[in-house]
Length: 249
Ligand code: NAP
Picture (cartoon, rainbow, N blue to C red):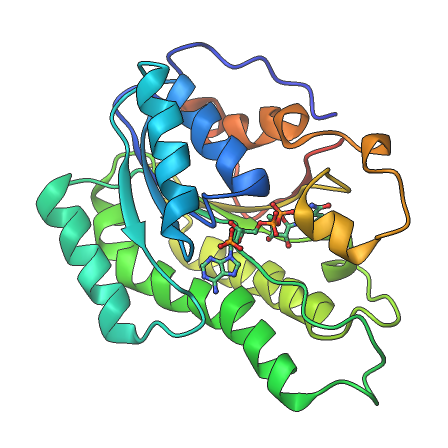
């Protein structure tokens, strides 16, 4: 596991948006960031799940979160601009963005892959990250030390048979992060840092869908992989940008 011990107040006074915050890694991330003092903006497509995360954060006495329903498959550029407007008006700041939501699509050969599913995976996993990041950049740029985290995968660093659009989409996220990191790099480290995290095999619905026969308990829970997510979001990682890192070390 990535070794990092986060200070309790690491994210105090930071406002952080997380996509896919209703379940899996995104849900744990929201709770963990809130526990370390952040105001988290929960986005996702299933509002009931976001509400449960919201309630849990409130019950624990962490900073009051916010919910912005967002289906990455159908959202238009105008929808993303509206989100940016809401964040400007409600919070006046944005210090962090975690592009976490993704779908698996089909696990099949390129030859057999349905074009419609391919497009859907690219829309949710790649195009939405471009549109959301683009819309939020002006607000992120106003923060002193903003951090953007793309979530990738081992199959987005080395291609693997039958992982189709999912693997290709994760390569694209690695590429987008590198392009953005390069564009935003500043010598005095006051710019936005942009990095990718490969969570590694983690006990979530996505993992269970990809490997239905395996024992879920053989992999770490989302809570176990938080150290790298905390490190990259907090100010201890100022100066780290353009890196592709592994949450499980
Ligand atoms: P998960 O349990 O399936 O959770 C994915 C989240 O994304 C869910 O909250 C889901 O919402 C949301 N989402 C899916 N489609 C959406 C859409 N169209 N609009 C908005 N939200 C949408 O997956 P996970 O395992 O936590 O994965 C999180 C990230 O880690 C992903 O980027 C994944 O590729 C990556 N990853 C995971 C593993 C692993 O072993 N788990 C390994 C490598 C990489 P609903 O709850 O409404 O479905």
